[in-house]
Image 1 (cartoon, rainbow, N blue to C red):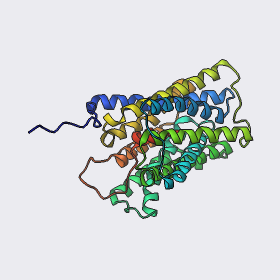
Image 2: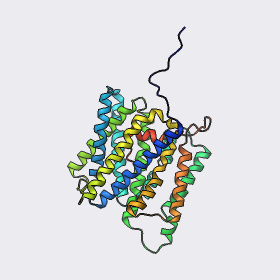
Image 3: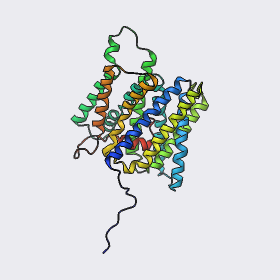
Length: 332
C-alpha cells in the first residue's frame, strides 16, 4: 500500500522569523509609498497621476503573472457586479487616502485610515454577522481613545486658533478611505471569496486603472493629472511605483507561505514606519501626545486583528491585513 503524497498546491510555510521579516519589509515599503507620494504632491504632481502610475505598473506585472500561470479570469455571472463594485471602492479608497496624505501629515492620515477594522466589525454586525464581543468592543474603545490623542483633539479645543479647512478635509478623507476599504473587505469576504485571489486582484487593479483614467480624461478632479514641477517629483513618483509594486507583488507571491492568520498583524508596522519616514524625509513630526495616541491605535489594531491566537472566540470576522492588501490591492 502506497503512502499518501502531499498536494503540490500546499506550499511549505516560511519559518515565523522569516515570515515576520518579510511582512515588516513590506509594511515599510507601503509606508515609503505614501511618503514618496507626499513628496510628489508637494512638487505639484496630481493625485490621479500618482494612482494611475501606481495601478498601471502593478497591473502590467500582475497581468504577466496571471498569463504565465495560465489562470482563467472568468467569473460566475452574479460575481461580476460585485467585482466591479470592489474595484470602484478600491479606486475611491486610493483617491481619498492620497488626497488626505496631500493635506495632513502622512502618519496622521495613515493612523486615521487604519481604523478600518472597527468599521468592518460594525459593518459585518449590521449586515447580519455576529455581534462583537465585550473584548472587541473594549479594543474598539481603546483605538478611538488613541485616535482622539492622534488628532490632538484636546490641544485643538484648547487652542485659540481656528482649525484649518485643509486639516478637517484631510482627516475626513482619511476616514472616508477607512470606510470604503471596510466595505471592500466585506465584499471580498462575503461576495467574492470563491474567486481566486490573483484573478480578483488583477480585475480590481484593472477597474482602478480604468476608472482613474476616466476621471482624469473627464476632468472630474481638476489638477488630478498635473505633472511634477521638477525631477524631485518625478523621482518620488518612480519611487512610489517601485515600492508599492514590489510590496504588492512580493505579498502576492509569498502570501501562501506567510501564515497570514497568525502573522498579518505585523503589517501594522506601516503607520509607525510612516511616522519615522515622515520625520526623516518630510520633517513632519507629531507631538508626544499624538505619538502616544498612535501607539495606542496600533496596539489596539494588532490585538483586534490577531486571528486564531485564541481558541474559537465568537467575534466578528476581522480583516486579514496583509492577505487582504494582497488580494484587493489597497491603496494603503
